[in-house]
Length: 278
Picture 1 (cartoon, one colour):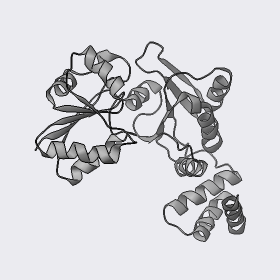
Picture 2: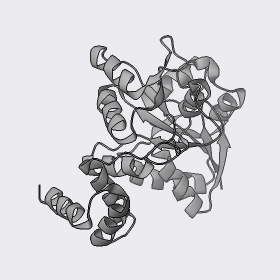
Picture 3: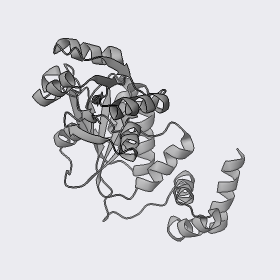
């Protein structure tokens, strides 16, 4: 039986690839790529002739089965993403789960990571952090996510695309309050930029300046010593939904949040029902 290698690739600067990564990509029988066109450029730059196959969120189920069968027949494969470490906010996670379930050995070849690179340069606390990935575009899931992390004291890490950045900054400001943030753009690339500011100032800046490139947001954790402010109705319902998502009954969730939100159980339940009917 062969093996699956998780291979980290550069997040922008091709010089950040490791010797081991190049050697691994040359030695395996085939490479599973998120976008074969992107990976082909990397392969051509380093003289890697290994065949590429497509593996992404839209074909993960069928392609995953094919990949596992090939590995079980004796071939070795590498999985890469367009940039950075595969399997982090990435469909490669499903392939690793499939390999683990079938007893296929998985090895890791570490590489660049936008999350840890941004955290290191943020100037914020690095002792405890929580990687939150991308916020959902679905409002209910998005606000439930924000409600769940509102009181976390660890530093928060988000990824965001340029066309969604301003909405995300405004939602973060509404739910988390005006915290310090490092807005990291195009890390390791020609136009790399790290803006250390606050959520409100970042939102103001990108209202006037069109966001360009890929972003990592590093946000300071909640200040446990700060006096709790009264929740907005939207924030309170977001916290109710977060408890419901964990399996709690709606009435019980309303009762729990009523203890700390300033709203009564009946008020919360009425808002919950009204929102569901919209």
